[in-house]
Structures are given as structure tokens and as C-alpha cells.
Image (cartoon, rainbow, N blue to C red; front, side, top):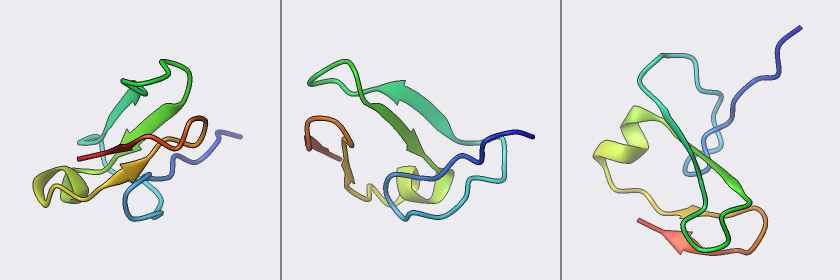
Length: 55
């Protein structure tokens, strides 16, 4: 059973292969997942560890 990936911008499950997953640029600990829609529309995300807000 695989863990579902949730977008940090819209909180929806990521179902396509056009998402990005990276470490928070501020604390380098939190994992940020962004779907293609949020990336295109520059929706803000919040790091679950340090609460850094990014574009």
C-alpha cells in the first residue's frame, strides 16, 4: 500500500506525474509537494515543519 501524496498548495491528492517534491528551501527538513495546477497558478505553500511560506 503506497502513501498518497498531497499537494501543499491545494491539499488535494496528487494523481499525475507532473508534480514536484522537494525539501523546504528555508529549513531543509519539510517536504513540499506541489501539483502542476498550483505550480502554474503560483499558489502559496506552507512548510509543515517551519511554516515557511513560498510562492
